[in-house]
Length: 493
Ligand SMILES: Cc1cc2nc3c(=O)[nH]c(=O)nc-3n(C[C@H](O)[C@H](O)[C@H](O)COP(=O)(O)OP(=O)(O)OC[C@H]3O[C@@H](n4cnc5c(N)ncnc54)[C@H](O)[C@@H]3O)c2cc1C
Image (cartoon, rainbow, N blue to C red):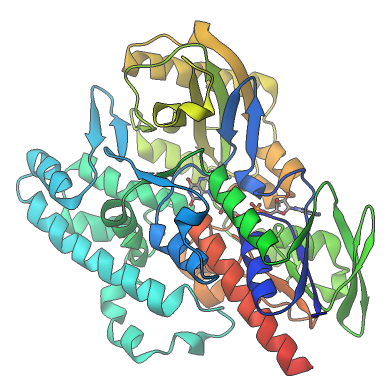
C-alpha cells in the first residue's frame, strides 16, 4: 500500500491534486463537507432545473485536454463540448451586440466601431498569444516557492513583451479608442478579480483565451466537468468521503499525523488542503503552526464576492443568448464600489447565463434556466432578504427592458446565494467568490505559498494559492501542488 495522502475538499483543485497523487502511487482519500464533489462548481437540482452554482464559462480548452491526457485519457471520454457562436451577447444602454467567435468576425465588428481597429486587434492578439504561450510554458505550472523558478532565459528576454509593469487598462488603451472595444477587452480581466487599472497587462493573455480559444459548453453544464474529474479520480483508486467536515489535525514534531473530522480520524503521511487556504491556516491550525499572521491576511486584496440568483422560468425567452453581459450601466461607478469604497452597488453591471438556450437537459420542456450574477465587494455580510430582493427586482427590470420580454410573472423557481453563503458553505475568507485578486504583488511567488513553512507534510492548493482563481488554474494548481508534495515527501523519506 502507498503512503496515505489526505485531501481536504473536492473542488476542482482537490480532485486534480487527488488524481495526480494517486498517479504518483499514493493511497488517496478526499474528505468533503458537502454531499457531492465540485465545491464552488456544485450543481443545484430543483423542480426539474439543473443549475451550475458557480462557474459557467468554459475557456482554455487546452488546459482540460492536458489534464485528461496526463492520465492517458481525452476530454471526450468524460464529456462532450460544443463551441458557442456567438460567444456572448452584450447589452449596452441602447442596443445589444453579439460577439462572434473567431478573429476575422471580431475584426469586422471592431472595424465598424473604430476604423483601423481590425489591424490593431491583430497586433494586440499577437502580443496576447505570446503572453499566453509564455504564461503556460514558463509561469503557471511553477509552484512559486521562490523567485528563481522564473529565472528563465526566454522569460527574461521576453520580459518587456510580457508587460508585467503596465496595467491592462493602459495597454488596451494604446491599441483602441472606442469605449465599447475597451470595455469588451477589459471584461475577461474581471475573472481575475482585480480592477483593469491594477492588473498587469500580462493578463491580456485572457483575451487570447477568449478570442482565439473560444467559449465552449460542456453538454449537461459545467457540472459534467466535475462529474468527469470525479469519475477519473475514482478510476485511479481515489476514495471520497462526503458529508464529512475536517475539524483539525493531530500534530507532533511539526508534522500532521492525523486529519480529524466530525466523524473520524485519518492517518496521513501527506495532507493537501484544497478548502480555502485562509480557513485551513487560521481556523484549523493552532497559531504556532500558521505560516501567515491574521494581520497579513487582512492586508490581502480579495477578488470580489457575488450576489447570485438561480431562476427557473415557465417559458422560453427569444432575445437572450447562452451568455449575456449587461453593460448598460457605468462600469467605473460599479468597479469603484467593488474595489475602493467596498459598498453595495448603486447600479451594477451583471451577467446572465441561460444554459437552457443551448442544452435542453438543464430545464423542463418549454422552460428556461437563468443564472444571474452581480459582482460585489467581498466582506458585505448584511446580505439579508430585503437587499437580495432589492437587487433582484432591479436586474429583472433591466433584463425585461433590454430584451423586451416580461419574466417577473413567469418565475417558478428562485434561490439566491451571496457573501454570507460563501462563508457558510465554503468557509470562504471574507466571503470571496474567486480567491485573491491577481494584482502584481499577489502574482506567482507573491501568492500564499503552496507549501506550509511550519508543517513538513502540509500543502495547499486551490484558488488562493498558485496560479490563481478560475477553473483551469484550479486544475493546474492541483497538478503543481501534487508534484511539490510528492517531491518533498520523497526527499524526506
Ligand atoms: C459564482 C462563481 C462563478 C465563477 N465563474 C467562473 C467561470 O465562469 N469560469 C471559471 O473558469 N471560473 C469561474 N469561477 C471560479 C472557479 O469556480 C473557482 O476558482 C474554482 O472552482 C475554485 O476551486 P477550488 O478547488 O480552489 O475551491 P472550491 O471549489 O471552493 O473547493 C473547496 C472545497 O473544500 C470544501 N471544504 C471547505 N471546508 C471544508 C472542511 N472543513 N472539510 C471538508 N471540506 C471542506 C468545500 O466544500 C469545497 O468543496 C467562478 C466562481 C464562482 C464562485
